Length: 261
Image (cartoon, rainbow, N blue to C red):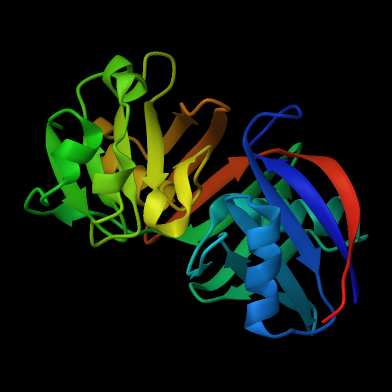
């Protein structure tokens, strides 16, 4: 079997920043075990696979250890591959996913993704969260992930997570966030139980962060930066029950997978 694969830095304006994702265009779905094996071999936060479905596409995402319900940066990467490498000519791409229909369209040099908003609600501080982060947040909320809010960007940057504690929590991962010094808000994201100690830039986390900071700051259009080692910028807009996330992407590797099955 031979498969074309692209490695794309998403939420990046130049190579080697943002979040790298592998993208495999497919003619049809192989066994899940094969896709999981490819994702494990890539050892990136996400590998995206898509197949044609009429004029649209079905899209799935795998971490090195599991399939996930939603991934922003790998969706951005998949749309980038379709627009830039596979000759997709319509202005908008629609992906059928485990999180419903996700749409991506060109906005000048940026790609804008239309995702579901997933507001977080108040919760008790789970055992292990403070130990895992090494400091006490001002506020803790929960949606698909825990959201721990701190008082400053400096505190978010200074966190040195204990992944042993964080991997025992009952959510996908932990978002840490604060108001930003030069942008509206900053964040980091840890998901060790899914094989991602720290994700460089996490689109799905901003489905939680955008409604939180829109309410906190009283604005629906926000600029965000994920302050991981690689870092990446996102434009975020809240539109009712949807979140619009925008960013750019750069292809860094084109390759071919060849193996026996």
